[in-house]
Length: 470
Image 1 (cartoon, rainbow, N blue to C red):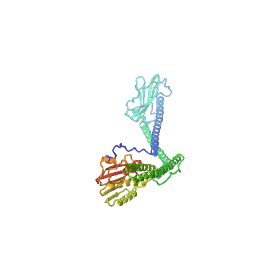
Image 2 (spheres, helix red, strand yellow):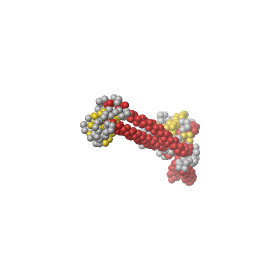
Image 3 (spheres, rainbow, N blue to C red):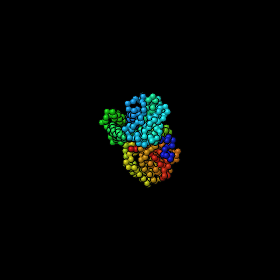
Image 4 (tube, rainbow, N blue to C red):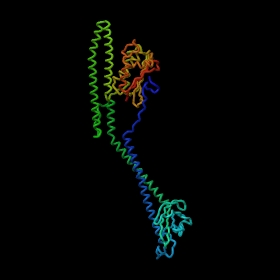
């Protein structure tokens, strides 16, 4: 029986394994991430270098204006150390120092009292608040201007006429910031295009470089589907040894299977004759002892046949690259059972799934499905329904499910568990060895599938056989 999820009782729940990304996806993703991080870092470095160079150019311009103010402050023919008079500086060759609140300002202050001696007309009486000078020398930086906009300033403390004076020049940074932002946008666009080109180049490189792996996968798939016997070895030097080893494995596998089949056949023939002789002798000399010998010989024949079947099935299960289409096999079995049980089974329905393939030996499919059909026909009251469909199991594998239902007496849950035990017959009045369902269960397990028994909608037994599919 199965629960609502389709799992057999006692089975541990199995989650569907996470699908791993392909090698191409991993390589392209790593290259894209690394390229993005590198180009982003390069963008920050380039913008920072441009900003630093712009500030140096800004300071060079401010330094020129500071020196021009100093030269204009002292009257012509006098020296800054001992001037007789201080003259108001002129326009410094820049009209914006005269335009009200233009963003271009200069001041000359007394270092001791911080009183403004001279100021540019552009200040129109508003103060230019600057940080206090840090000793003598030149100081530069950013600060809010009279209108609240950011300005870049430079101020220097110099002694004029024996008194320290602070000469300061400030220029609005709006244009400078706009240039830096424009450069940053150009850098971003340029590096983005370069990044796309790099990722595209990596993608092409990966696609071309991994193409032989795709060929290897296709060749291996053809072998698995039974369309080819060997893997193509015309591959690059790095993966050609893998194809060679796989071909060697396939050849070795076939040799082992053939040897196993030969040994199984030899063992069957070697045991069949002695057991037949023992059984014949027991029948020829009736009596309690002969009856006991005949009974035990029959049990030995049954057990030997069961284990020989399992050995044969295990050998066949290990054959690489075999498959068969389910529909034709099932149609032949349904026709055969219709003829065999024509006096007992009135309705034998069949519905299949075209192109559904069983990944295994055709004779194994015939044995599993044939046993289920034979069992259903034996116990049915007149109706048997058979169907096949493709599905995906809990582990994400492609499976084929063959469902056989009848309208017979059916089995209880306990009887369903007993029915798949070898040699276990629930009704001695019906001919058989009791191995049919056990062989089906064992063979399905060898293929990685399973046999589940339960109650059919028709009222009898429902057998669900799940086997690997392509």
